[in-house]
Image 1 (cartoon, rainbow, N blue to C red):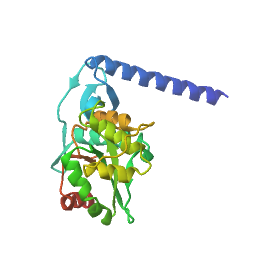
Image 2: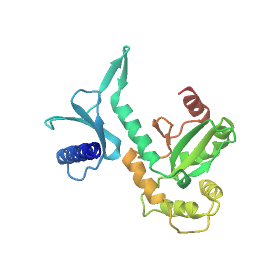
Image 3: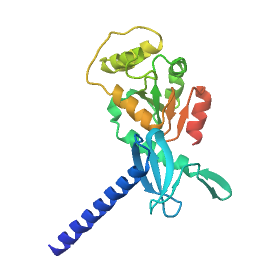
Image 4: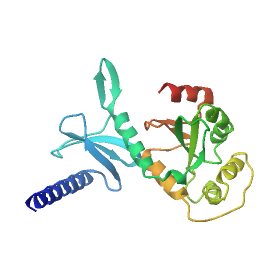
Length: 234
């Protein structure tokens, strides 16, 4: 019993400290800036703080200093952006909170990799990307689509993607939309708004935004032969 009480007290102290750190960090942020996460950084005595749109800044553990800028680490002579590492980590965490079943999935029969793509059905480059989807599938690369209507939640694109996600054959519906065809207007309990919000927090600003399994984000159209090389070569 004594050990149990000791354990609960330690947990309570840890939770209290965590809450106070989060509150102190939030106090230093400008009004309206959302705190995504924080963690110990490789910069001694500083937290790496991830805020809205997947931006990274560094706050000292005594809360007296804030550093906003690119933090470069030289490891074996080669420079490495610590900002990019912390951004990628947040992207992976944020995606893990979205149920895979909420994506429109094109699954390769020989799946070895998955790329996750924030897409807009009216985006010309998204349509070109989709026209090459068989190239990815034949190379063992599955595509998971997430909705990102660039013009926001009051747009025709938002309504079209809502209809696609509510369709009983979502793969066919999104393909028709990307071909410029009309589909039946539908509404239901759907994840389009959630995808859009999550994408913005991750820093998605345009489409297609392609996310690799390690959290790297590639924005804009990349020819399939080039993107396949990037995916395969790591």
